[in-house]
Image (cartoon, rainbow, N blue to C red; front, top):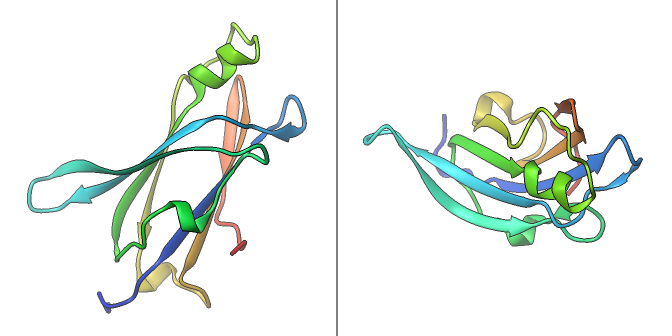
Length: 125
């Protein structure tokens, strides 16, 4: 595995119940510090009106383990949803040559509803 490869990251949150982008969701990007066995916050950002955080808003990343933490309780409360199951959604992922494919860009969308969510590796740059 080459540690000189640099990766870019973006995200998109779609509200499946409303059928629209989920704007103003706070997302925290964390990195695993292997020696210490702890997580370090690299960036916090807020989704824009299109529910996106672009690659230019996240730092360039190296191979390693990361988490995107979507703070969904605040979003649900703001839009008047009082009953929901997931106050936060954590997506833990690894950036490496093994998952590289043909691109060093990772787009990680979140499809969100009050009682469920789904994610996948998208292909947006």
